[in-house]
Length: 149
Image 1 (spheres, rainbow, N blue to C red):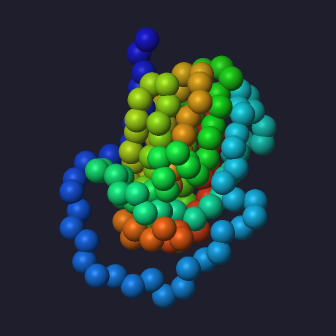
Image 2 (image 1 turned 45 degrees about the vertical axis):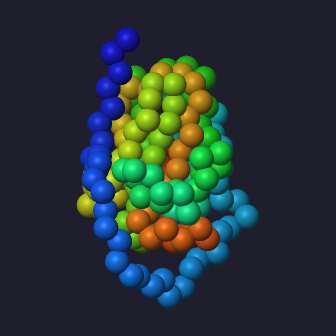
């Protein structure tokens, strides 16, 4: 099986200086949605929300929530010839996806926003939206978009 995904991926060690976050947005009650999708899903895009970051440092994708606590779980009931996962936020965020075909990290694919797109086999995917701040209460309010376009 030929699996193809594209993303702007950064695998670099980052040095962190002192930083201060003035105001932290509150997580909304409806944040951190899960999705069950099949090709042709509606509405397209499916949209998830939450707060980026966490206290777990990854080697390549900034800080995310705990390994056993993804921000979103996406179950694809059939393979997608093309699916795009992208994020919009007010700050520099990352996208970490683990699934049946591996682990993907994206940073700065569209300006400062991450994206992973291409063929996705059926299965369950765990998605974290990270950042480089390292605050366990979350940093940037984001919207995750899952789209076949």
